[in-house]
Length: 148
Ligand code: DQA
Image 1 (cartoon, rainbow, N blue to C red):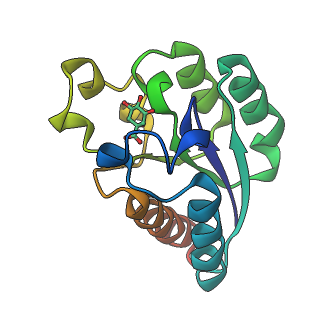
Image 2: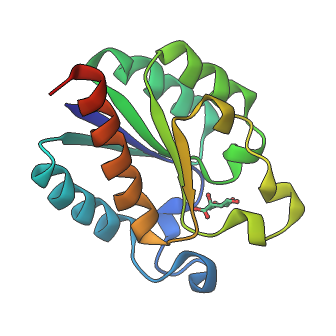
Image 3: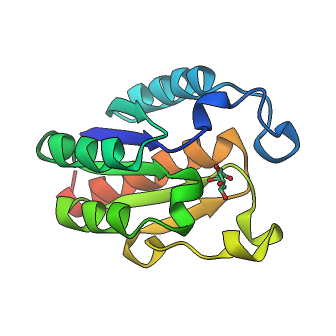
């Protein structure tokens, strides 16, 4: 099974950006951890990070045929991007939404996601572990779906 891991604006700055909310691991360290966990779960990953909404929407469209599911931390686009919602819906692939911080314990504008109703589920507040929990949730969902 192949999973596309998508990170939105400014998640390339993890490690130095707001460590009290996002922890101290860099995006590369999180990706390395995910590769290890994915191998244990028989999954292969492909990664993409961009600050550019259009580039993200395009990446989803070009990768959709070659992935089984998405692990998505869209950063601030979570709260605003109908284009991203439409791209995820059009891909017809299941996804788990993750956030490093507990968005519900922060400013009210972070309490709303424009696509969480399309997600299998949402994991927020566990810093880097949100991604590993999300990956596990996604691989067990895919296994259930395919009966493997
Ligand atoms: C975030 C939460 C968003 O509100 C914020 O804009 C981010 C990161 C998180 O992982 O906690 O960029 O998605």
